[in-house]
Image 1 (cartoon, rainbow, N blue to C red):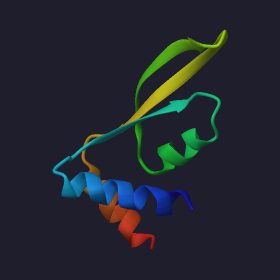
Image 2 (image 1 turned 180 degrees about the vertical axis):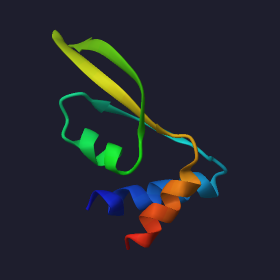
Image 3 (image 1 turned 45 degrees about the horizontal axis):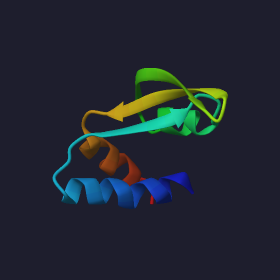
Image 4 (image 1 turned 90 degrees about the horizontal axis):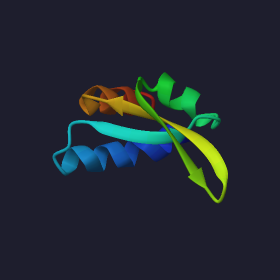
Length: 76
């Protein structure tokens, strides 16, 4: 299901002329494994507070999403 959501986003980024992508994901979110499986590289982390809750985020990046578009396309 996740790949079906990523596919149109990546296609639109490529169509708009982008060649890389970055997402921020809460550290405790199970989606971290999904982005790692898609080849996302851990680039950075940050801590922040929302309504008194301390949260951590991880940035995942793809420096060349043409590789990702081929990988995602082959799975459909």
